[in-house]
Each structure stands twice: as structure tokens, then as C-alpha cells.
Picture 1: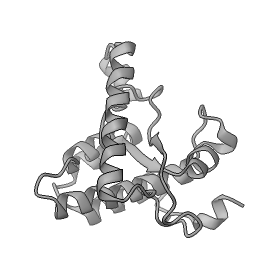
Picture 2 (picture 1 turned 90 degrees about the vertical axis):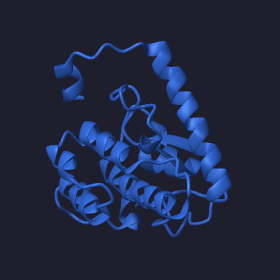
Picture 3 (picture 1 turned 90 degrees about the horizontal axis):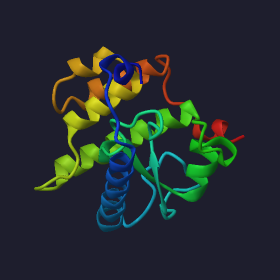
Length: 173
């Protein structure tokens, strides 16, 4: 990201890979335990209730190494959602920005549910704001108050051209 370049952050690639793998395990365990292993992206009627066997970096590990180990940057998806929708034609070097938008909104729902319904939540609203600040490179995320989910969703939507999330079925056509 531009922030990482400007801040001249040094990255230990081995440590980054280790921490990223550890974070993926945490998300997988959480998803299995508290979400019955189903996809976090439930806007998709085709895959609602399908098993999420892939853990996806919403902001790619290679491009955003400083946030790749944040569980707030990881989302549980079905193989089809991951390799067809998030990465067009299974090319993991490419990101579908419209689907990234959908993933961020879905992740915000997961985070809200975790914080509001668990005595000891694993997710952090503040860390999600940081992930968004780095990944979308917008100062607006640093101005959102803790727990302001409406403000969060508004800022995400504004970052993606102020359009509401696209109709999911149009993405996959």
C-alpha cells in the first residue's frame, strides 16, 4: 500500500507468512465453531449455507503484508466464491474489487455479530478500521467511532464509488 511505502516499513517475509497462516487457522476455527463452517458471504443465495473451506485475504497478502495477519482481513469463503468470484478465473494475483466490496460488508457483519454476542470476542472493531484504513487508503476510517457500524458501512460504500454493493448475480454472469 502507499502507506507502507511512505512509512518505509521493513517486512520479514518468513514471519509474515507464519503470522498469516496462524491467523487463517484462527478464522477457520472460529468459523467452524460459531458459524457452523458456512460461508461468511451470505448475500449470495446460490451459496448460502455452503461450507467455507477457503480462508481468503480481503486485501491480498502480497500487496498488504502489514495487515495480512489481522483476522479482520480474512474471510471464510466457499471454493467457488474464492476462486471464481474473489479471484476471477482462479487467478489469485487478481482481485475482483466488486466482490472485495461484498466481502468487506460481510466481514463487518461477522465482526458485529461476534462483538455483540460473545463475552470474549475475537474480532476488534478498531482493528477492522485499521485494516480498512490501510487497505482502502482513506482517512475517513480513522474518524469512525468505536461501534459505529452504520458509519463503517457508509465509509466502505463511499470507498467503492459511493455505490451500494452490486447485485451479486450480476457479478457472476
